[in-house]
Image (cartoon, rainbow, N blue to C red; front, side, top):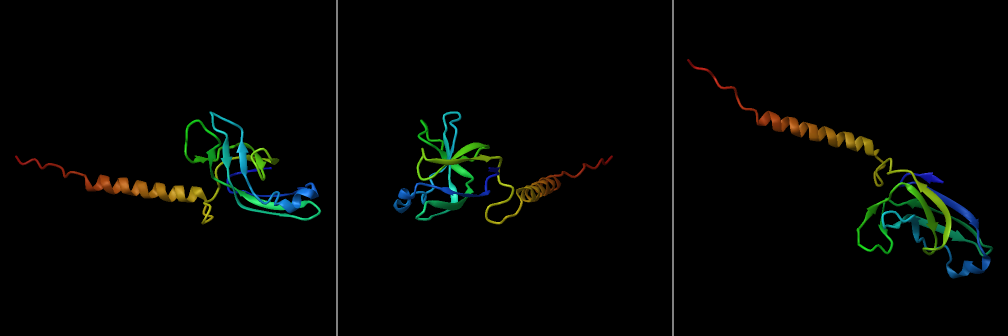
Length: 148
């Protein structure tokens, strides 16, 4: 499976029925990236939902988060954007991988509005260009008259 940040991922499968009454798979640990430059990036699984039947059948979904953090990093780098790459889907612990997901890039639209990122980039660029033009026009000096 693959997709950009913000992709809704669905999963289904079967687990040992003896683990279903202990809340197994009801906690989303995160998407665990391969260590790169000293940072094993953990990206959250937003809007995580999972149901487990007493027979051990699991169904669920989550949305790929956009910002994560480095796991046990020597230095605190603070929030890090989700980088393209292959991640382990870890539920319910760091070492409990249930599958793999490839983040292919940034979101194609804004998370809360659904407006395409490119559209807002174009609008913002137009405002910057208008501001520069107005500033240039306001700072023009009148030509000196030759009186002779």
